[in-house]
Image 1 (cartoon, rainbow, N blue to C red):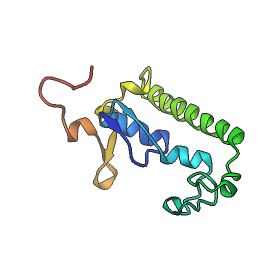
Image 2: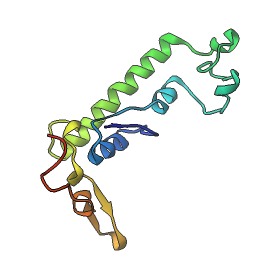
Image 3: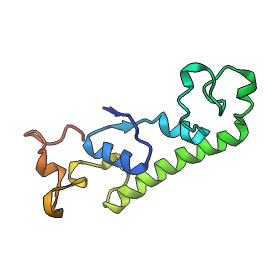
Length: 128
C-alpha cells in the first residue's frame, strides 16, 4: 500500500507506516524544497518561482544547481528522521512500524495504542 497526500514531515511518514503503508510518497514536500511559495498559479503558467511554468523568463528563478542540493537534502533528512523515529521505538528501520507504535490520544489525555482501537484481523498482521 502506498501512502500519499500532504506527508511532508517524517512524523507524517512514520504515522502512515504505522497505519500499514508499505511506503510513502510526497510531491508537496519536494515542491517546498524546490522553493514553491504556494502562489496557486500552477495551472496559469505564471508561477513566480519558475517551478511550474514554461515561460523562459520566469524559469530563470529556478536555479537548478541550488535547488538540486535542497531536494537531495530534503530526501536525505526525511529518510534519516523517519528511521530515527523508528529507532526511538526500538525498531531497526521505519519499515518496521506497526499499529502498536502509534498512540491515539483519547479524552482526558489518555492514549491507547492504535492496535487496541483497531485490532489486526485474526491471523496476525498483513505485513511480515
